[in-house]
Image (cartoon, rainbow, N blue to C red; front, side):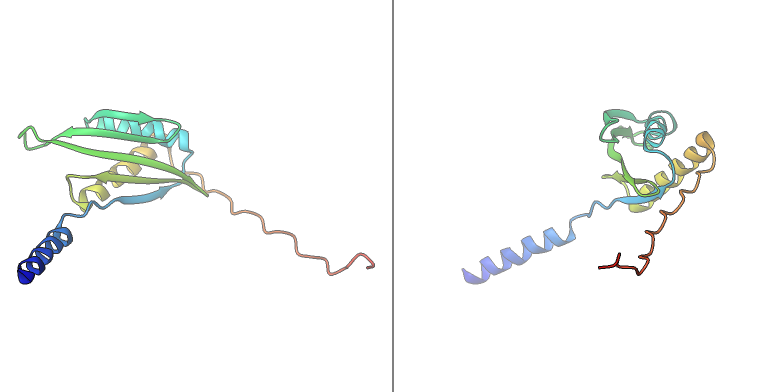
Length: 140
């Protein structure tokens, strides 16, 4: 009986460890969040031909469904999320039913669309360093 339980635990562990991992691909772009979001929405709807399931401009995300290109009728789900960071926007794509390579391709095409529609990004100037202390203690 004890061996059966141990064997069952190992089998369960094997299933958990070999389950497909749902990775995410991300990149940073130097565009304002509002413009990056509206471009992302057009990219998902128009360029990729997906149905937008949910979107929120304030939270800067789009979740979508796409038909399988093979014509088998399988629906693929995914999301595109944007996060404001210093110097621009971090873009993250999650395609639950596709490979990490496909997620990277989506990011590549999205960045291309940003450049086509908004032009080259304007580099953000680095923050100015804090002034160095003068070394005077004010007579104290």
